[in-house]
Amino acid sequence: MIDPHAPAPPGAPPPWGTLAPLPVRPGTGRFLVLACVFVCAACGLVYELELVALASYLIGDSVTQASVVLSVMVFAMGVGSLAAKRLRWHAAAGFCAVEAALALVGGCSALALYAVFAWTGAWGGLWAAGPRCLLVAFSLAIGLLIGAEVPLLMELIQRIRRQDAGGAVADLFAADYVGALVGGLAFPFLLLPFLGQLTGTLLTGTVNVLAGGALVLGLFRGDLTRRTRWRLLVVNVTVLGVLATAAAHVDDFERAARHAVYGDDVRVALQTGVQEIVLTGGTHGRPLDLFLDGRLRVGGRDERRYHEALVHPAMSGPHARVLILGGGDGLAAREVLRHTGVDRVDVVELDAELIRLARTDPGLAALNAHAYDDPHVRVTTADAFCWLRESAQRAGYDVVIADLPDPAITADTKLYSEEFYGLARRALAPGGRLVVHAGPVRARPRDFWTVDATLRAAGLATTAYRVRGRDPGFATGPDRSAGGSGAPHDWGFVLATAGGRAPRLRLAAGGPRPRTLTGRELRADALRAPRPAPPPSTLIDPRY
Image 1 (tube, rainbow, N blue to C red):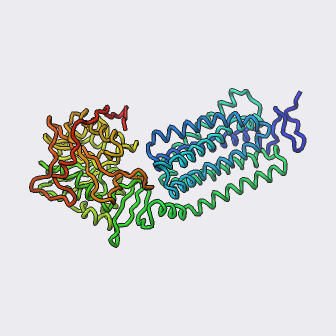
Image 2: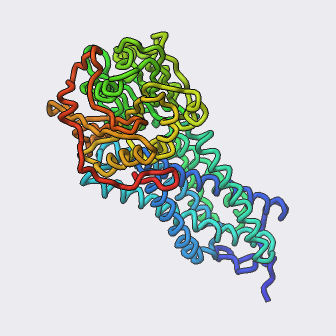
Image 3: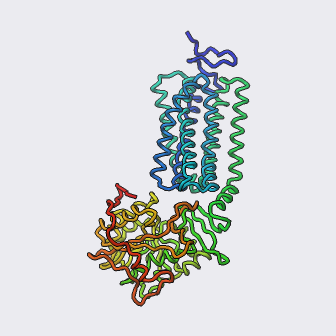
């Protein structure tokens, strides 16, 4: 019969059922183990969310990236749990090593993935397989290490005081789930807005290695030989040194990576509560480029052609009251204000910082002709969908301009849904016109025609058109990734009205003449039948 209080021979693993020699009372020791479970669970969920967020930002299509990362992690956690059975006789040393490895891999994962994106530019097109495989590899490694935690912690808590397996599992999972809740809330509301993705992940790794090291080297040091204690101490200090060094140089890394992605002419780079905003050029005759979350939204060489094609066909009729959804850069408002007879322009933009830059940044304010200084322009900071739900009934706009991100960006598919266009239709005055930027026709024809089909499903009559470049330098376009791959060669738009007949594609008689296109060119680029008829996109069944 095994004596649970009998000490193990020096250097030998403790027999199963032997209680650990603790420097504190068993109740205190048990509390410390559960506290460590709480901390490790919070850190583990931060690693998962960080991979999902970074993959969505760099690759796009957040639903796919979340599905890949989370499914690979859950699978790997199961494998890690099985593998941890081999470490149960060395639970204390094994847990300390697992936490050190998890802190190093999880803490540095964002740096490694962003470095690959910045210096290879290979997150799209032919060479996308390599970086995507790296994302899967990090998900697999982190999942394996997270999965190994609970079996080892189960063994450690049983080394403090023997209890039935059901009660021990209940205690461990209660601490684990509460920790996951805290980590899940801390990532979007604390780490991301106040520390940023890279620093926040490095800090999480630091907390992770400190918690694991303190538990084992403090509470369970009696289970370790002198040599094992020194080895684990060196490993933990090394991991802390790596994370601290990375954190000390993270600003230099971000600057270097930003220049690798956007070039050497970065003037403004800030992370708002909504998105990352980067401005390049705009001074000394250099064209201004505006990037939102790594995607080009304003290209200084060809933005005028895009905004003229978006705005002027919709203004060929009554246009006293105009609503711009999105368009926080002020460039669509600039084109609207070129028309006489405009009494009011309402701009509904989600990001207040983008509005501030459009007002105050010398390059961007000059590009939008100081549109926000015009007394006719009124700005509301709000989500376009929510604002339409609350304000559409009393609106009565002659023109509604949807200058929104590409429909292929999953986070914005609700702004290209049948429900959204139904709300926009309610905002129109009788005979009013709605124009929508619908993405590139040549590169993503199904997405483009889905926008058209969705508008028609909402009861609007549509006229589809596109604008192509007149020189080889046109290949930028809005929503191109910063890496430069997959650049569209045209812009697609859909002009719609609540009337029974499709709106005519023309320029306003007596209105300002666009500098980059003519009415004849617009009519030549109209996309006439036969048109594809994909099913419309809805909130619960997005089609993009």
